[in-house]
Image (tube, rainbow, N blue to C red):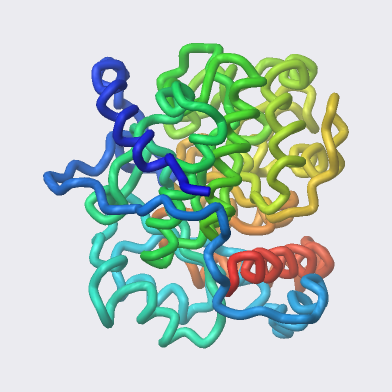
Length: 402
């Protein structure tokens, strides 16, 4: 079956141009310090030929069970395990190589990075994989609309809100076309789509959300995510347990949601469908403070009760989730950075239940590894917490064919 995603993307971009132009682009992305505005480029969108619904071919396969294969790949040394739980921002080939040589489990390419890391032979992602003799993830923020990075490489796509002018199947095709372009350049994880419901008029959400009602967000979010999976890219649902009704923008400071009981009636509803529809997706926990969740004062990324809620599925219509859970940016967002430094935040998030911790600045890598290792050796973080997180990291690599 032919994909119609690219054709639809181009037509919706033209049809929605005036609407997009009216949307504010003030704010910051999940990587922290940059504007939500797209990279500007005079080039035409990169080609992403819509051909098939089949997933991209993995680079390797195994007849062993996925869990056993993943278990066999988990590093034995504590320091290597701890490092594998970290995803750090890089700016170019050299900073990426340096971070990977320190053992991090993944690199994140923010808007301010040099795009040549995707295109320059000998200094691109493929070259990094030749130099680093182990799997690692390559992630990016690529939602469409205001949040799409390095469009000179990957092409330009309409916002999620504009995407909903098409059918869910067409949006799945658009996700496939987008994912194909990402994967062809080495990206394995897309920190998209949002499952936030746009009900409070927050600029940080706005047209990044698929809609103002939970059912639309769930239907189109899952369709988009499935398209990425079809292309061999891991989608990431965000921002659990829901940013749509928060009091503000976590990039700028503390943001408080309504009580958990209210989130259960709206913000958590998309997760009841999307996690079941696309179980290959990971989930990003946001920094919102949720009254009634744990102590009701701690940002969700640092709150064990938030991870327990996600893992247990103990909310109306929820199902247990055993996939990979990643944090929102721990270094470039003031909801966290106003409270603590990067290494402390990384350690606290892993202790709380995160499988991977994301920080966009890419600094304090060795300090973060040292602090996590020290916390385990001191008995502050159980060894089992590190082991289960490291296993999920390896399972995600296998899903991506790494």
